[in-house]
Length: 144
Image 1 (cartoon, rainbow, N blue to C red):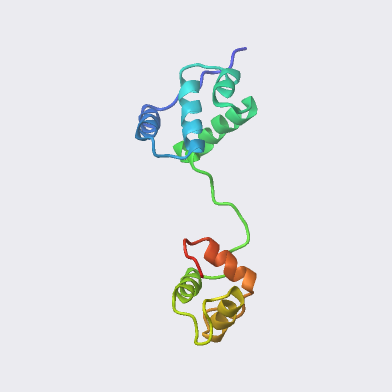
Image 2 (tube, rainbow, N blue to C red):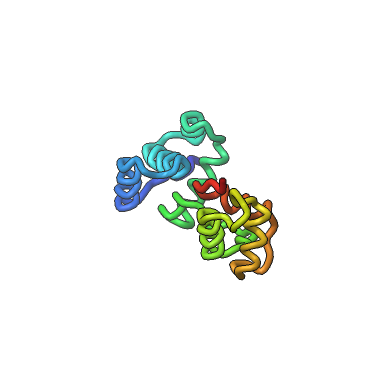
């Protein structure tokens, strides 16, 4: 018995074509949209997988996810994980502190000095110098 053909609704097909036409989506969203449109055209899982350099199982997962979530499947669901250790406000305050003039007697800020001053000024309850380095690394600032 042949499997029923995969068919997109006209509204979903138009949305996917619009997404591909804009050219401003992630490569993952591009691949997923392309796979759905190719399935709609009657292509096999193996052919689509070879074109997109993924496995046929991945294309099948995208197809099944489309059936449950619709075109929202172009974007991943939020993933669980450890929340950020420091608020955005604390990160901004540490970055601003690193961009300010160093205290008297110092030629420039060190990571340890920034960590001590951030705790002293109540930006954070506690922070290590290595964490200060990670906060500054995520910005385009240069503490020296």
